[in-house]
Amino acid sequence: MRNITLLLLFTGISHVYAQQKDTTIQTSNQLHENNRQSTHDFRLSTKTIAFPLSLITYGVISQSNDELREFDVRIKNVVRKDADFHSPVDNYLQYIPGLSVYALNAVGIKGKNNFRDRTML
Image (cartoon, rainbow, N blue to C red; front, side, top):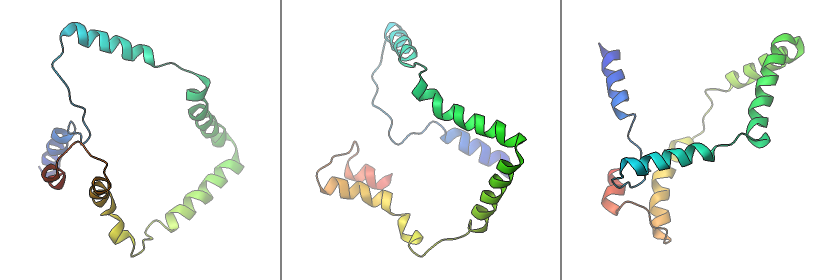
């Protein structure tokens, strides 16, 4: 029952965005035009394919190459060994994003929300 409650809670929150754009009511023709333009903006190029293709190629090759597989296992072991590491600074770093909003506002960069809404968020 607890899992179902958590699932319903998180699925209800899935459409809440902190930086959501302001929208106006659009006619169906305007929506259709915007959708048509956004599908034409995406183009496959060498730049957009090179990095994902190289990672996929490495993954396929490492499955059949024992040296690469051992290299991957060594890296995984090193990362897992220090996975619980944290420093006392980490206790304060969690507040940096919230404080940066006020700091940016103090130096003159205005955000979308007013002070009260910013504090509530």
